[in-house]
Amino acid sequence: MHRIYNNLESSEPKFLRNFLIKEIKKKLKNFNGNLSELHKYLKIKELNNIRYNCFKAINEKINWEEKIFKLCGPEITKQLGSDLLIQSKINLSIQIPEDKTSLLKVHSDCWSADSPFQKNIWIPLTNAFDTNSMFILNKTKTLKHLRYLEREKKLILPKIVKSNDFIKIKFGQYLIFNPAILHGNVVNRTNKTRVSLNVRVKSIFSPEPTERNPDRKFGTYYKIWKISEDTKLANEYFKNNFL
Image 1 (cartoon, rainbow, N blue to C red):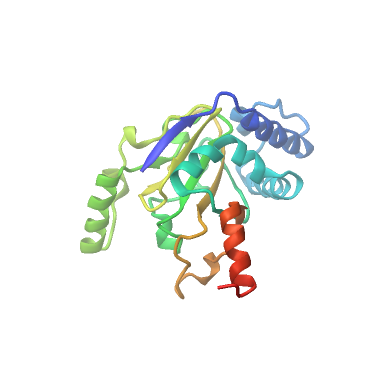
Image 2: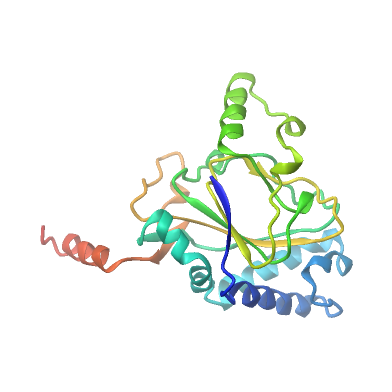
């Protein structure tokens, strides 16, 4: 359900990290360039403005889709096939120490109408560990707690999340996980900031959203990432009514 991967030959994490550092320095002139020490240069109330400007820059100024494919395209293709959709915009997370305003409580992405057929790609731009990381429950724990939720109509976070549920991952690695499993974060009690990117991908041939989640459709939430020559030919058949 989740696994950490290495791509030691890829320069893409370094490119993405350096791009982000340059954007932050435009706003924080004294920033030393160490993302894990970002909290030393801004206050919590300034964080959302920094995060939004960086989110906007990375989505508008660089071809991040190609960067992500160079990093993990072969693995994603192995898992989902060669015809892929990707989320229209890549997300940026910044978890600074003691920030209670940036929490994602335990959840499944399916609760907000995402597809259980997709995969999440999570790319740390700093080392992530302990409470500055996120927690992911395995399939067994997820199903156990979902059954409890169905029965009791509540989840009790401290009883769910254990220390070994937090992802320990180094800069240069990346994580692929099924977003249907329970995950989230807590207040960062470490002395390091965690910065990460995340984006959702799925097969072109996975089921389209229902009326419950029309905003998750291809063309709005998703766009084409990679498409095979066979599928291009098939589309020509449908387009020109050759069938």
